[in-house]
Structure formats: structure tokens, C-alpha cells
Length: 247
Image 1 (cartoon, one colour):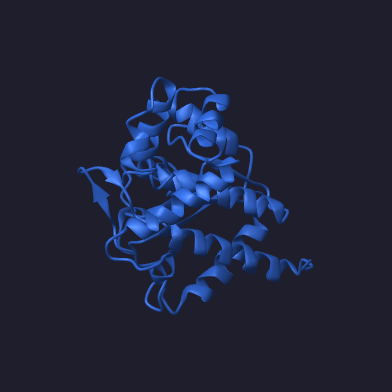
Image 2 (tube, helix red, strand yellow; image 1 turned 90 degrees about the vertical axis):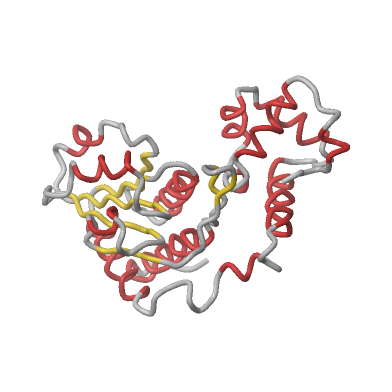
């Protein structure tokens, strides 16, 4: 996507080029990122990112993110608006029943871990923050080689929730297999493929239907909106089951 227009892009120099190139190759992640995430990914400073954002005509990073996401949706040839990503066919009729089951397990758990890689890692971090706000002892693991077994060694009620559109992420799958016969860990997945390897390892699968999109063979443009919708529905279900007040 030629964001900002070609005439603006060709005038960029120095660190701005690195930031611009990173944005173009991580389009689906940008709406979920913070300034420090973009700075780390592009190997520049936070202040360099903010100067870049201001050069592009935006007063803040959130304003930039919203504008970028809007243009991404408008540039998609088969979508008239982002609303079309969610239809009656996106989620199965059993979703709320499964959400109730997962919410119950979460409220009964000592630890809740959300994990994923790529753009799913951003959703995992969001899910962890959202459920932590509800009083759940939750944390994200976005490194599939993180030493999770020692951390859970002295605990008995753990819920490990994996986010993966394809349900086939090899590194994540390797981590999950370490827990598949562990009675202290309940495996749950949020995935676009109910018959995937990750889903088959899970006790409960929160599933959805979405078209996977890639460019240049490996850059993933698949929408994370269905997964985000499930995460937010799960948070509402947790709040209802815990009878937390609405404000």
C-alpha cells in the first residue's frame, strides 16, 4: 500500500525511510502497535517515530494509527468497509456457549496465559490486558521459547489460551505439546480453523471464519478483527459471570 502517496514517500530520508519500510511490511500490526513497538521494530528511537508521524501531518500516534487503518480498509479491493469483515457467518452458533465455558475456567484459574506470534501476539497482549482489568491474573507470552514450564511448576490451575488464525504455527504448536498431558494446564484456542493442529490440542476452541490474505508469499494481511471480537466478547462474559458492576 502506497501510504501517504508516492510524492511524499520519495522525499523521505534517513531513519524516516526505515520507519516507512517497516510500516509497509507490517500493515496488519500497525493499528495494534504503540510508539515503542514501531520504534523497536524499525530499530529507531521513539522520538524518531513521533517526528515521522508529525511529518505525515498527524498530531499524535493514535491519530496516525486510525488514519492508517482506515486507508488499509479502503485500499482492499474486495471490501467496501471494515464492517463487512464481520457477518452472520463469521462465528458459529455455539460461540456463546463456548465463551461461557472458557469464562468459567478463567475465573477458576490461578494463572491465565495468552500466547501467539506475529499479529496474533498483539491480540494476545490486548487480551491479557483486558482480562487483567477484570481482576484475572493474566499475562501474555509472545515468545514461543519462553520458559513457561518452570514458571507454572508450583501451580495447579492454569489456562493457556492460544491465538492463531491458521492454527498451524509450528513454534507455538511445539510449546503447547509440552502441556497436552499436563492436568494442571487447560489448553484453549482462538483460531480460524477448528480442525487445525492447535485446535485439536485444545479442550475448547473459540473459532471463526475469515479469509486469509498474504502478499509477496509471506506477508500476512489477514484481519484480526474476528479474533479481537471474540476476545472482547470473552471479557464481557467474564464480567457477567463474575457479576462485576458496569460503569
